[in-house]
Image (cartoon, rainbow, N blue to C red; front, side, top):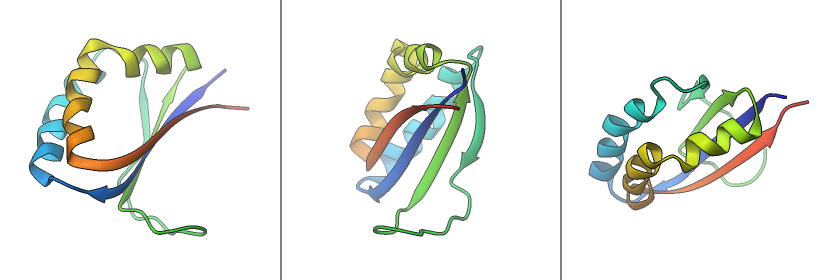
Length: 95
């Protein structure tokens, strides 16, 4: 069953760290079963506080989504995201 990783950027702390992340993250996606569905496009907040941006990526399964997220290649890039902004991240299984 499909799974979706959702990242929600709530607040930027250090733009240079985010820029480093954006340079490194694509390499961690190469050869992975990932399909970007949304990435920082215009959005409308319906409930709760507004956010700076949203990313939604589709994977074939929750296990493959977690394997990508936990991979050394992605975790090395993610360290820059962690220093660059406050994010919420989650995996949700499709229906």
